[in-house]
Image (cartoon, rainbow, N blue to C red; front, side):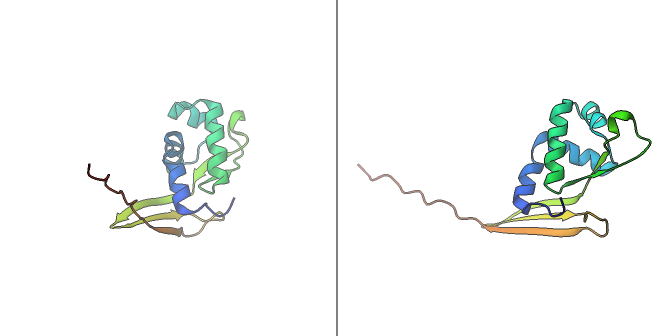
Length: 127
């Protein structure tokens, strides 16, 4: 997938424990699913499920590498996320992601700003 989801949706996905570990580890160097599973202590099937979700969301890319161990013959994974920020400023929530383009090149910013409205709470009538 080429385009990441809206920044807030992507940020929520990144808050999932295993997803954040996978993105952090694959930002250091590309890794295969079995290596991620062992290093991060994530069961292999759960690891593959998260990898598919992150690739589909555009936050992770799958690289084909020859000469890798048989269990990684399908490729290795690399994070496309270079920076993620969540900023609360008064009544505004700003989510900023810096994502590496699919084909390489300088990272591209994705920004979403939300105006927050606190619910009005009415006081119970005095008795």
